[in-house]
Image 1: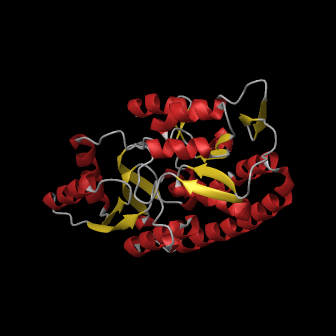
Image 2: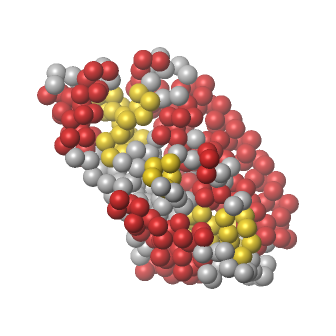
Length: 316
């Protein structure tokens, strides 16, 4: 966590660096106030993660061409921008990223770009009182696992696009409103399906600490091997403590994640076995990255539905 805090500070600074005399405030964060976009359409936009790209594509519609930097199976905590990424970022008219230190190693890059073009950390538009604190002025960045909380980030995308491209303001507003309805339906699905798990079995054990917003929103206890950032390594002590907990509670399933190594999960399974407690791997959850483009899991709603279906099947 200490490493994550150091690496992530600059990324948060990218959002704050917009507070120059030319800055315009959007939902509590600052972004560059510039002349309206005057280039060709669709407007070239870069998003860091699949979850952020999903927001921008839904709001921007035909007016934006979104390039996603981090694909399926990519861990944003450890991601470093390549030379090709830098070219894409420099060509973009606007940049959207998740923030709250998720893209920690890209912090300096985002700070520099924020001085030149609209560069928005969508999760940092959420009221801090609704975030989970993990340290002094540090918050859990995995807000997309609470669907209604993630829905709030639509306002930052909608307002940024509308101010930068006022000609299509009504289109951005209508698209954002439409997606808000879809996400409310998705949240209803999560609550309905997860409510079918018996109370004594509502324990979600995962590779790293990405699901606490999910647990808070949908009433599941969450345990993880690694911390909020995958830069922190789980030690033997942590694994042994979790083995003892799972054996005591009679937990039958643990989940791997698409963007995190299975090594620690396998160690947990073997540890339980050594204690005479059999644990199955309940499947692979999407955590910090969505599925492959062109598949149902390659969309935010599809990713969430995949996770919920898998968890319900394994824990019921």
